[in-house]
Length: 409
Image 1: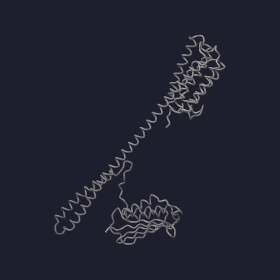
Image 2: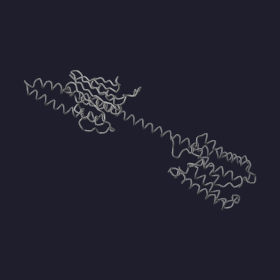
Image 3: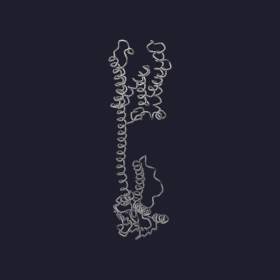
């Protein structure tokens, strides 16, 4: 998981930090804090140079200020461009060999850059970079003439002090790095736990909705059964006992209102927030098939409609299923048949009604086994009413949809 203030290890040595400086607010804040720190270190060095012991004034004011600016650059860039700060420190160390001047700013810069490397880089890269920074320092301690060393300090003692400071800064950085890694891991675990909790809550809501839907379904089915029994009884006693028939019809009226209310509640339970509100326009049926065929003709596909038998009273759901089957079949023919003609045949018998739609086009490509959502929808609609559906290429070319649905007796 990436952080805005974390790894600069994968960035170029000298490139990329300008873009980070422009775009990253955290980087700008880091530069501001480090600039204040650098200003304080420069102020200390100027005070020591002007009022400190004479041995600290090894160069003039111009050289002192120049080296301080170089050290400031390393301090300011250590968090937004760590590799650039490392190169600045190494360059300054190489230059100090010729000038024999070791400003306070550079000493502070190498310590803080070591800490930054330990805090931001992976362990292996941090260790190698720290060695790259401090091996030249330790080598300089060995070759530094005795007159340039502090009084009473040997080269080995100075090396020990410098090595100890390097280890302290490095391990402080590694401690901060480990803490940041732990915090990131905890944040990730909290995020995953929150997602799991949200998923469990959504699942619980869905389970409760399904339970309520089952209960409402049973209640609606009971009301409908009661209305059917009452209607049968009212029809049988209508001639000889009108009062009883009227009472039964009144009960049917009340029960139908209750059933309608429960149906609305059932639909509210099943509807999710992501689903758009359904249109209130009437659903099409058998009467809309002729208009559908005419629309397809106007779209460029010649369609012939044939009706065998007399349509009897059909449930609205069955009529809607027939319409949707014809609509989907003609839409597929219009899209895929090419230069062809289509035929729609509706056969109404005593026990079965048959819907057949076929075209004379090129049909599906050879070897195509993909089943589209439209065919799946047709199969589900037909199965809902106990029918069967067969789809596939015709022997003479084209595609055929054949549905057989039992008539309610």
